[in-house]
Length: 389
Image (tube, rainbow, N blue to C red; front, side, top):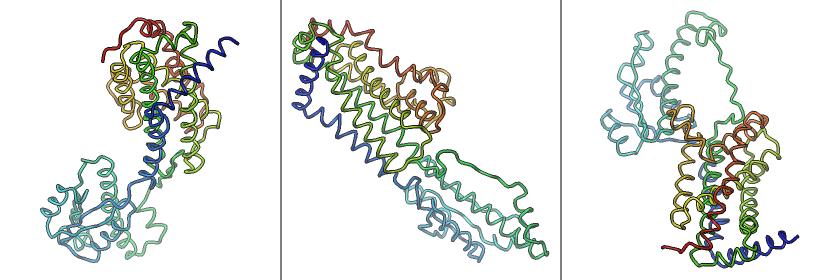
């Protein structure tokens, strides 16, 4: 009972500090929720639509005009300009007015009907990776559709039946099944990795910041005195409010994406709750560890921010970890977000049993327990260190 009273007393003290410093309100509630609504609204369409595409149609035949209309009707592309020459189209692409352009030379329609394999060209920029990839896919499809249309017309003229034409055009039928994210929505796979990563950044930063402020204003001794100099009780009491507030924010995020936006997921509610608990506790543990490793407000916050930002790149959401160089693959295990992302993919997104990724669960628990190795150093810093700006 004594320890519980001390923990509650320190928690009430921390609550007063939080209400007295607006930084806590912004970093614990305002900025994380703003991040949630920003990314979910920014990617609300799921995939990029109506990418500006240019056309250079020197043939101007019924066939070429049909290809241009088909390109304009595609979801990802929109024909915004027609150019008189490839030079004009290339200049427009260099000025970022278009992402790609289709070049149809003169005589393309006549050569197609004569079976002389005309050549059409398309050019696209990869300055923006996603836009360039989507534009190139649409333009490649246009080229295949033009060839298929001519082949279908020739076979029909020779008296082939519909089944024969279909077998000739597509001898092997591909049956595609996109699991979990059938719409290939960028919102589903980017928001679920970027937003938790930014939240973990705020958690780690604030956990290091709150210890640094105790040392800066020389209130560490008074904080420890409330716990009878028991650093374990002092840490639990200090971060109890932090953990509760961050958990509420994370639960709001999970409810918003799964309950309101209806993101697909195969995992149970318990798998989501378990992941949220591990996310918050591991982030707070890493922030405390950063301060214990380097008992300085500036240095501990720098370590926490640097490691959290690098984790967004190393977690494997944008670039797969198995494709990285071996040293980077090994380094990825040192980032909490990497383990969060693996647990999310397996237990929440795909609904696989947690035993399949047990090591990542153990790793997050290990990040939660990291302060154990530096907690004595934290106590020593509060009692003996002098704050240096």
